[in-house]
Image 1: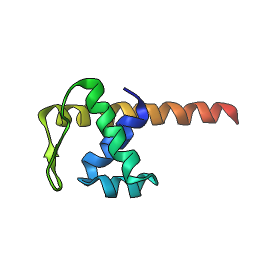
Image 2: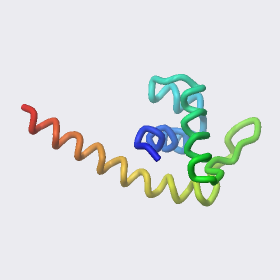
Image 3: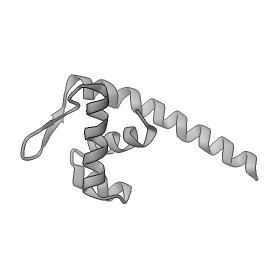
Amino acid sequence: MELEQLRIFAAVAESGSFTEAAKKLYISHSTTSRAVSALENELSLELIRRGNKISGLTEAGELLYKESRELLLKADELEEKLRKLKK
């Protein structure tokens, strides 16, 4: 599991759309879809309920989203602290 995959998954969860998440992150729709699929394959869990559109997160998806938000926030804080050391 990589931070970038978690960032993409969180964006999809927040927007409810692969297309909107891709726009928000300035990446392609296919990159967004592949990242979430790779995460699901790695975890052997379905994270997002799909049909013609996203119909929500699975129980595992809800848990991952909740926990990943905290992890991503911490990662961003750490990155900011490290950047300040460079100055």
